[in-house]
Length: 408
Image (tube, rainbow, N blue to C red; front, side):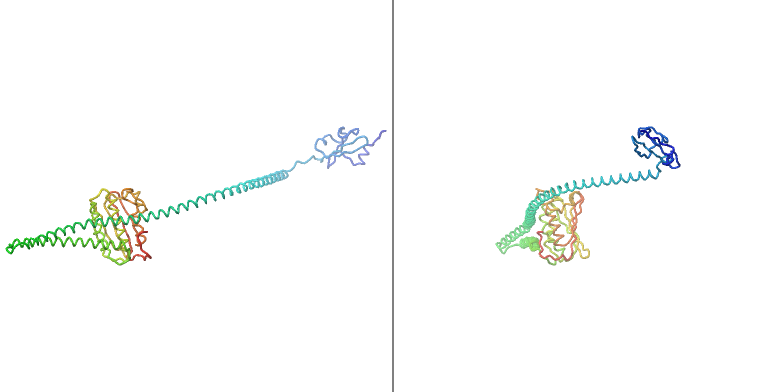
């Protein structure tokens, strides 16, 4: 069976136009072979330019109808490309941010786990360290207590040693006037005994000679006993002030003179002399005992360190008034203090003669007494080879102390 179609009439009826102002049309599928058939309507070019196609089913086969715009497909504008690029960039950024968020979340989880582990380990270490520190603190407290007790014992020993040296010096110095007095007294006694045994025929020249001898012996006894009395009086005042450490009004010049007289015998044996130079005649309302101890320690320190090989040497004491303060200077002209040791002279247990009679507490005691009990200041200046100068600046009225003591 065959079917004859009036093709021109079919075109006209269906409105098929191969080329129109709006589109180009083509049909493929001669002998109803579909997409494998030849183009029998329109141009082959239509199928080569990405057409819009539709399948038309017929008895025994099919046709493929394709259409494109009359002027061909338009090229996308720059704006469309820019929008596509922008959308691509936005999509990439969103993807990158999403990746970063996921990665950051993962890293946060890892960090949180690591932090939890570190906190646990840190707590363990802190507990262990706290226990170690507690044990160390307990041990340190015991050591500090032992050190304080040792320091107290050493300070007491230092004071007793200074007082012992003072007593020894006074005892040695008293030997001379007392010995001279005993010798003169025995000479006077012998002279009187000889006179009483002589008869009345004693010549006038012999009588005058005997009187001259007795007068000389009497003068020797008077001078010697006067010197002994001065030594004993000065030592008594110094010893009283050192043992009582009570506050009272006293004359600075008298206190320094008594101390110089008391210390002169002991320092003279080392070949050193004490000079009193321009001592201000002023009264202090203070603690003479601690002040004596300060000056005694400074003088003995100068004898020990300024003249390590012994004299000749000299130590000069001076004092001036500055308003409500008095400035006392103790200076020597010995070897001086090296610059590297100058800032440490007041530190406890610092000494350059360890094992040679130095404990390192003398100047530390001096600093504590001056800044504490006496309420003043102390400064040291030294130049190697030219001596050392200690300057004390003390108030004329010392601050009140609840319980003045020199052991601190």
